[in-house]
Length: 324
Image 1: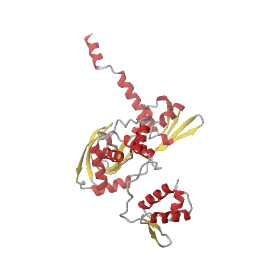
Image 2: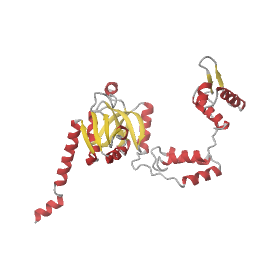
Image 3: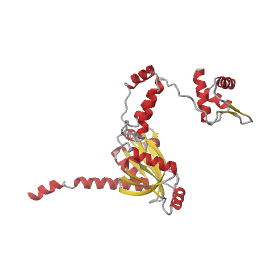
Image 4: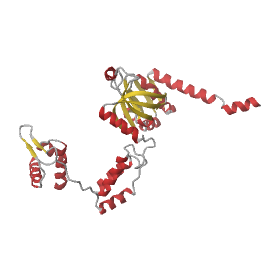
């Protein structure tokens, strides 16, 4: 890293909060003496670095100090624009119009040669945003509720059916292209995770009359996923089964290689077993469930239900048989 980049990096670090000379030296892999010279250079350039006295002292910037507009390199512009492309186009982005205006501001702040180089780089890169992108208004209302600590009534579509629930969202995140919100659910009085693309309606509501009790019970009852009291899932995998598990975001982190095969081993809450039964059923003979017995029973029952379903004659087929 050259000195100009290091001076910029030090300024950004101090803008985020106080830093000691030792911590800056470790971060930028230079000596403490070099950092002291850099701090002096920043002061000479007009950056208002404030020295903090005392054994735990260091340096900081005034609270109202901000860097002037940065000059992006072509590589940095490519990284930013490519990242924005993952959020859908300017019309159907979960972040709404902010996604479009952010790109516009980046592009208009660039030198023509930097924009031209970045455009050439991007011509060789492409991304297909996830097909299950949530709606911007749903994401916006979830973000506001998280920010303000507000309750929402949501219409949720799951494999178990459609429900309306009063929830207190606590976080919003993206994993493997899917958007999720973690929320305290008044119906189950537990902390649950909901897929945002399955939320079709979001309405702000007053807190339920027993909101404090619901939050308390949900917080007290929320045990870690791998809590010793939870059942342990153990599944023997073939080589092909390993590849299938590696493609599953909820399973790939639990693979243990053992000789020519592998073992899936993890704990989960009991009410998650039906989900894992459905997932493991897609592995066919590439997975052998060792335990728990309830998980094996769920897979077997699902297989029997599927077999019975496909052994039934189709409605039009039955009608033709009767007519004959």
